[in-house]
Image (cartoon, rainbow, N blue to C red):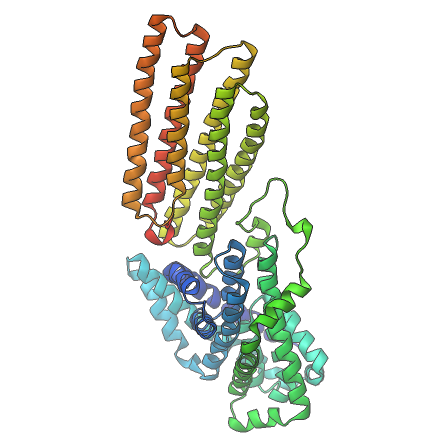
Length: 550
């Protein structure tokens, strides 16, 4: 094999993969939120779930992308494992569209697609049109790369050594292994099927030689979802087991069919186009496997639960992220379609969890002061450390996510969430400030008057009511912000009122100097909690409605 063949093959593969990446980036920026919304809403029915998975995957040309979205939804609790089964089945059907497009031989007009797409990016100013231009340019570059690979591989059919090597693919185990390993390496079944079609068009392989490689490619494409499931919940991992099970069952079934029936000669008789033969077999594999397994979705779920049963160690202890996928698993993901929308949902869930901890600490802090119980401080300190941990992890997560984000709306949402996590952390700090007054009260035997205690109870209640309002979901952003603003104003008014009453008690001599100092500092923390709550409300209300159902 001379250098020109290798360079031509590598160059064509590079253009093919880069074209897919351009399309993915354009689609993510243009429609990631819509795809996520469709998947969330239309997966309760098995037929709809399959249809949605097929259509979205056909549009984005990546079953891996759809499956990774599903893994994220299952991990965050937005989708059940059974719902995920239908979408995965549909995704396997939708991914065959790339092969069918290649079989149509649109390579002749591929440069036109690339030119129009680049022209839209360079000459038009509207960002949304740039996204569509990226999709078109990516499609053109993809087919140019396909053409380049096919041309570079034509001489290989005259090389006995290569022909002999390829002939071993007709052995089912060898073919399946080669297809699975190669697809796992490049993490794209569409790309690996395209390369197989290029080999077929060049005359290097026929359907009888490549059919088992094709089946193996369906198994190899699962690697992306497996990587995305690292560090996720048990159910999210089971989603990848379902994906693997689907393709393994299909591979076993079709391998047997190809051995005992004239399936391969029949598919060859339908068309003389080698690329179309592979595309048709790929489509048949996924459609037939889906039809056979569609009534067995519950059994696939049970199989996944049998393979990955619940374990005591899966109940995480200590400080951990409950909804966000850990960064090491996330950075290996090469198919970002819809993922930023999913990450925003997971961020919101993690922030709500963090806010709940801050709310608990507020209650603990005020009760500790009223009861002068230093033991409560240790409990609050542990929660405060957890809040600080979440603030650090979420902030790092958002910082890295914003670097990759291409959608302006999602980038703005991430920026708002970054500010929100800081404000929640500050609420936790003020709760700890209040807690620490307990030690002074206990050590110096300081006691607040009955009137002051009633005021502290009132402060506690309004703080808890405000934070409970922040946790509410389903309220229109404007209405929600108005309510929080009113609560913050109430906190300011109460602060002014309680300071006046404190001064009156000081004049009457019913309040000691040390008690007055602590009460004054407590009022400052009370007021600041209201300020940070309003900051959170303003940021969350500024996010688009699809990101602010909170």
